[in-house]
Length: 401
Image (cartoon, rainbow, N blue to C red; front, side, top):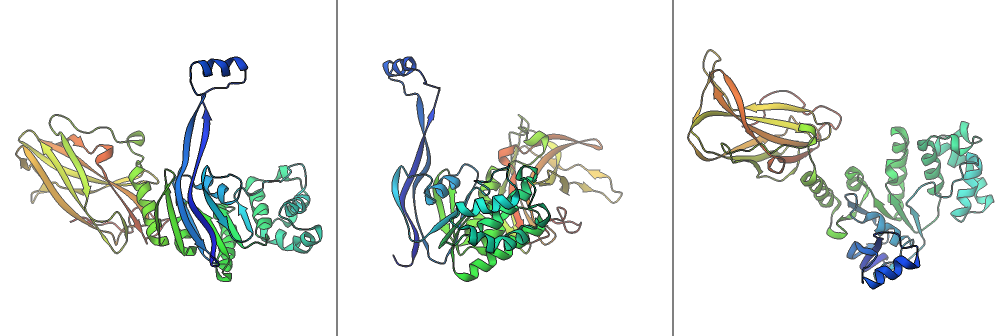
C-alpha cells in the first residue's frame, strides 16, 4: 500500500429524488397511509473499484451524466459513498469548482488573500506569492477593481492562479484545462507538463481527449455510473470518442434523419467494416445494403457530413454516363443488394464524420429520390491526425473506391 495514493473499493452512490414537496405533516401522513414513497432512488455510481499509484497522472473520462463529478466529490470528501470505501494516502487538494469562496464585493487583491486562507495559507505566505499569482493570471491592471466587474474568464484565471499554489500530495482537477483564452490555456498546459515531471499524483477529469493522451499515464472510462474500461490513455480516449460517435446525430434535416424508407425500398443501411476511430493514414471500409421491391433503373449518391458543423458534401455518385456525358440508366432487378467501399483517409482532416446514402430512380434525364438512410442506419467514423481547423477534406478528388 505504500505506493498507492488512492484506493477505491466497490464504491456506489445513490441519491433520493423527491417526487413532490412534503413540507406538511398532512402530506407525510397521506403518503404513509398510501404506502407511497415521496421519492425515488437515483443510482449514480455502481460498484466502482480502481487504484491510483503515487506519481500517476490519472485520467477519468465519460459523457455528461456518467458519474464523473460525483466520483470526484467522493474522492474530495464532499460526498460519502452509499456503499464501499475510499482510502487516500496523503493530502488531497480538489480543484472541482474554481472560484468557490470568492466574494464579488471585494477587490481582486482582497480575494487573493481570502482564497489563499481557504487553502490553508497564512497572510505572509500569500504576500510572498502575490506577484506570481497576478503575473500568471495576467491581471496586473485589474487587481484593485471589485470582482463583480471581472469577466467570467478573468475570475477563472485568477482562481486557477491561486489554486495551483496549493501544496498537496494529490491534485484533483475537474475540467480546469478549459479555462481562459488560448494564450492562457498554453500557460496551463506548460504548468501541467511541469507537474507531470515532478511525479506529483494528479487526477484529471476532462472531455478533451488530447489532454488525456498528452498527460495521463492511465485512465478509466465511466458510462452510466459504471467503469467500462480501465486501460492506456489512447485506448480509453478512442473508446470515449466511439461512445460519442454512437450517440451523436449529424446536424442535417433539422438535427436528425427522417425515416427514408418505404414499400419500394424497405431496407437501406451503411454497415462499417473497419474500426471507427482512425488516423489519416488508415482506410475506412463499409458496405451499403439495400432491398428494392421493383425492377427499376437506379443510382446511388453518398454524402459526407461533418458532425461538428453540420456541413455536408456529396462525395461520390454511382451514376454511369456515356461518351457525351449523358446519364445512362442502370437497370436493377428487385431483390437484396450489398456493395463494399473503401475510403482512403489521407485527404481527410481531423473531424467526426457521418456517411449517408441516397437511392435515386432514373426517370428520363432526371434522378428522383426514392429512399435514404434513416438515422440509426448511417455510418459514423472519426479521423484523427489531420488539420483540426481545416475543412472536411484537405484536397478535392475522388476518395472512394
